[in-house]
Length: 350
Ligand SMILES: [Zn+2]
Ligand SMILES: [Zn+2]
Image 1 (cartoon, helix red, strand yellow):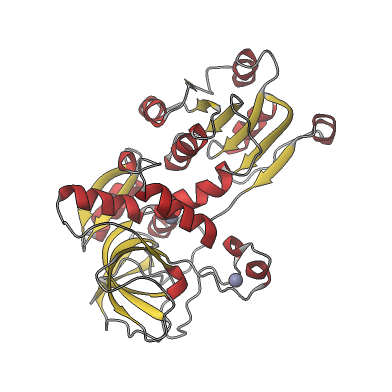
Image 2 (cartoon, rainbow, N blue to C red; image 1 turned 180 degrees about the vertical axis):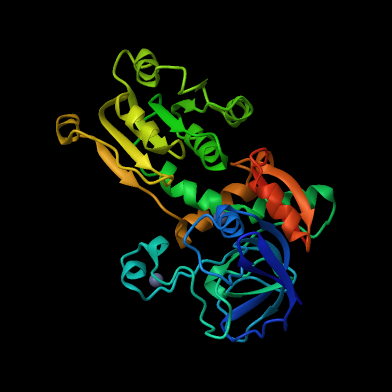
């Protein structure tokens, strides 16, 4: 079978390797759709501290072709499944505390002979039984089916945003701020909308602003030319936002958000900050205002299951994020498109 190896910045190779052998606890899946997420984009650009070689592709949907003799799964041959390929070992300190999103073996494989990485950009993928999530996608394979398949491949970002969007104790009618209308910000909008809150999106880019309205934001403002804090107060009788979800915009954006928060507000740092930089915060503001500052990172087994259910029942519209579908093995071209600012998600189809 063909697999993709990231060998260095802007260097990807398609190699012929043996189709993986299925261990008793594993499931073999014929890959059908893979989302090219920030992880793959980072390896492609060489913009992080990543080490090579690496086998990318962690947002995968495909068809079950073989099931190990002792695999504990309700998946059957022919089922379309979503795979959560990042390792959740179940035995490390964090997994045992119910924080499996922080599993210390996140990027490791159980097979020491393999090149590291989730290896989804391959014609076949073996997954551990616990990494397989069944869907109810029927077997009619038309264009609509392929669209649904690409949406299901994007369960992972939904699973990450679910943890962020469901955590703060929000009330109907509350005012929330989402910063950044990339795929993560827009998913926040879609999910938060269902919690009955009023949503302000802060995003400078015009095209992304339009996407935020389409996703369900009540207001979209340009944080560079608008006084964000004043805007939040105007819409809340002078009190400010009840929750802020930071997904992009750097430390200045976080600083800006702090000026527009009501007492008792939550600030969730969903996105990472690049380039790295500190924020200044007066601890008395946290004390007197009873602010709650949280972070959220990656997904858990639980949130992945929720994500598949949300996509399958169309409670989230993933179709708006599938910018292009590109056939394997045009991986170079697909990654170039994925890192281009005019795409949300590029999905590789097989
Ligand atoms: Zn991802
Ligand atoms: Zn673990």
